[in-house]
Length: 129
Image 1 (cartoon, helix red, strand yellow):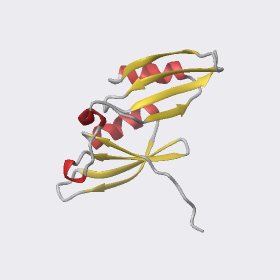
Image 2: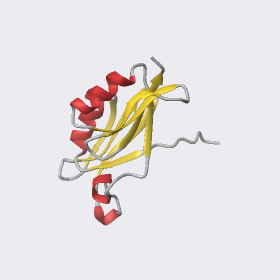
Image 3: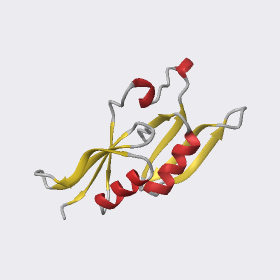
Image 4: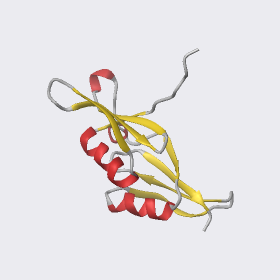
């Protein structure tokens, strides 16, 4: 049987800008890029830790809408990091918005929620401090 893998694809208004944000802010590595006839990327694959994900442009004709087009995102992306305060601060310094403050939680983690500049929601979590 072939190995099964879920590969999230984040729909964004500008894949180049999103790819740069995820590389610069979260330390993702770009591993693949395909461009359309106009030279704009149709898909950019990134690797964040050991987790691959992709970004693609919003294409209304295909039903591909960004969270900003829809008025929000029903999906939470959770990243477990060594220093959630540092990662959250870096995200907001580059245009993200704090939705839930990063702080110690009663369930034994330090976490909070951040909306990136493209409308995607991230739970940034790590060990208690």
